[in-house]
Length: 580
Image (cartoon, rainbow, N blue to C red; front, side, top):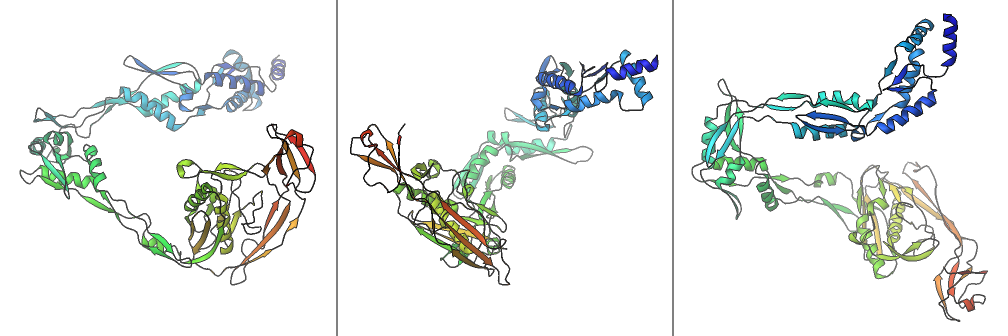
């Protein structure tokens, strides 16, 4: 009979969770692995907003699994459920199978939580319950200094609360726990305050002045009383309190002083004459030494006369010192380029500000990212709407229109310097004012220009522009690399065709040019960068191909002229469309 029963049981629960097995109270008996996982996943999803209530002194706070970013592993729980009758030998598993009919097994859910969110949730509760410990100190009432004994505190035991809370959150069932409390000991419970009282009485006996040149701040006795703090020093048998003026307590005053005395340091920089670069020394800055100034005020306040203190400052070194700048190896011009183009005033403005943003010192091995370097094209950053390429060869006003003049100039300077080009794209339109096959377009979050400083020293990307003439030079340390370039010449493709766009508002016999278009052409520029010992850099011969597809010339015409020739049109096929 036992053998028969065992056979029936094995057949019924083959590939299924055995009867009597549940996970966090959810019965999974008789379910396949997929069915059990689906059931448990649904239970977990519904339970993520089930709160565990923390109580203390008649008040309560709810924390849900979602509040602490908890995640619960349904797959692992189902796996554990399936293994309840499959993890030992046949005899043991058989006994366990029959036992489950009489005594079920409930497997707890397990998971993880966001430590920062858990800490924040517990801190929010604790702040409303905690009674912090207070060290022995002084108080001033109506001008009289009195001693305060230390007081023990009573605060939430956060570690214990976290340990208790974790399994309850994973259980996904309502629960209530009392916030565990612990006694908080003050740093100083009792101390001899005789000397501190005498010192405090002296501090508030009159005003104290703080000076910086001709600037004077006057601290009244009331101010001084608010700034007094104490520290405990080891005495004979018990701690002795010493009074002082706290920099922390007088922070609002010191913030005002800091604004007067502070001087920002100036970083070392570079200057160039177009061929060489040299270091311009920076300048040290000055900052308020808050703690030293507080000590000076304490010393002055403990005097019966001459109660004046001077502001104490410290020197602040620039982030980049002259010595550090010299060590960068930015000495001579490695490569440069100049592009001239006369655009509208708004375009000139964009070219000027982009050139300023593009300047950068690039560390060895660092990748220069043009799009990231110049940043967002916004009016707040100086960019203006100006003609830029939009869609299929259309020139429309866009914020930052014209920045590709900067990208192209910089690309050619880097190209001539022999640095590694990481990314470059040609424009969709061909512009004669750019060097043939060596233009570079940049569009936000799409096409970009990037290069790597593959030298052993820093390089300085230096640009200047009046909006028409844009020049970029790259300075660094020469390592002997040589650059050899070739231009393939132009290969021409399909000729430009004319596309008529019917515009109802145009009078017969009139037309407007909507898009100039272009005939197709392409070319290839190669570059070979070699070192003095013959080593070829960048993997060998570099090829930069530029393809400019045919773009139709668009002309707006009236309905009456839609089927006729149009003055100024290009020879070739003509198509007619209707403007939306």
